[in-house]
Length: 167
Image (cartoon, rainbow, N blue to C red; front, side, top):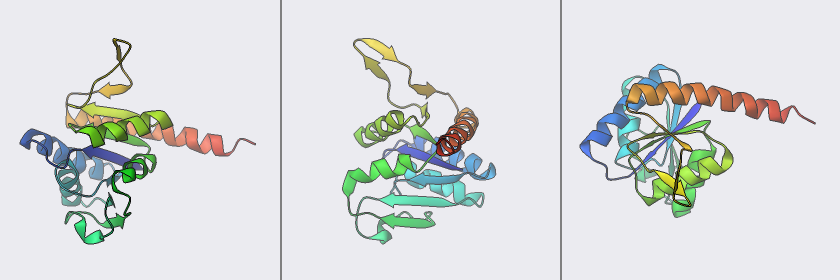
């Protein structure tokens, strides 16, 4: 199971703590983490995962894999800038968004467009025509985010497998 964790490269201390805890708990549940591989939320989630023996993948915007934070196991240098955001989320079965700026917003949009569940911790709120859009599943703790992501990722993966077996 691959869970994307997305957020800003310069996050608050609170967001970093949340991300690190999310990383720890995902690793303990056997999930691989995929992220943008840089600093902030990405670094914190990788650090948390590695502290519990997890596997981390960083999809980097630049052409040099040495740009990855030191807790990324598998750095993938793309050279495509922010376009790498699509690869981050489309490689996952669920997304956890923690805080974030416009890059995070684009990742949320790519995930929702593809039908990948997005769990939000202190992140963007969406609205359409003045009405709240509840596509982002709001949670209030790292544990709740991980539980929801694992549960929804299993369902998403089952749907993917079922759709492949259709003629």
